[in-house]
Length: 422
Image (cartoon, rainbow, N blue to C red; front, side, top):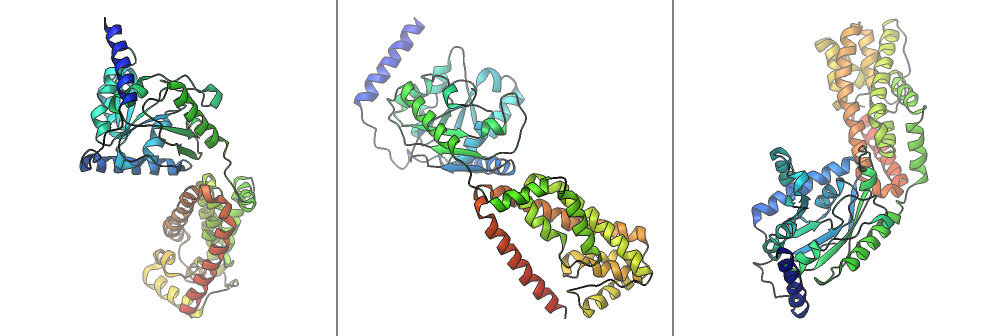
């Protein structure tokens, strides 16, 4: 009896929606309550931030105005995060999730509802009722996101599973369009039964399809979007690739160590300039490069301290007498702790190291104070440029221009600092 009623319902839905035109929607129909939109905005910001740190997210296309049923390919648990980061918050997307998995326990249910905007869909009996319960939300302007394959697949175009009819029957019942979406990159970001890795995720939103679209037509639309998105190559710069290769090679860490150590002795270019170039080119190497640069800076400063204490005067290009006099005054008042001013006043680290040696500052106290002062700036700069590199991942082809702008800005800033301390 239940099967017969469901068959009758589907037939009725098909008949009525094919003969009826879309109803005219008022402004009230297309408006989602403000609190719900605010929550959706925060949720989108959260996942956009997370995916930015794991390689970035790129969207092409937009959802139509008003409610719609979004159908997408499904190859990873990261698909939900990608869609929440990419879809407009004004549609307050709701994601259909397997009730027997995501709502199997109270804590998992809370996480799914609050972080993923999930609603339960039973996979064995009652699933159609769960979907039809979202009809009013669709008419109010929400986007209901469903994965018609019903489970994660391999992610390859040829491996796209067959589409179940539930999402399309919901669209027919609410008389809203079906919007196909192709997702690429999530199968590399978080493979099925695999570990999280850094990669760019792309979302391509297709043109709306009528509510009467067949499962085969919807599947082909999603497969075409996925294929087109997956085949896109990210344009890159040869310069960036070569710098990234050096930064990630066995030469990267020794280079950072020697550069920073030389700057603490006499070299006029601070290690943060090297980090600004290397960490944007190779964000994943940023942490190691930053710690290595810090170690080199501290080692170089200890050597400069000892040399100055024995009366050796190393060359100090791009420094002024006023810089040395200021540092001597600070050291006389504060001792080794005076180096805390260095990250912010523009005076090179080598001036502090040399003057501390001439003032017979204890090596232990100097090392501790320098680690705090230099560590704060070096690590912050390295990680900040790594984050910038991840944000700019899709524009890597412009990396040479970035290096030119960086070099120009550094030159101008250094000139102004030297002139200001003259």
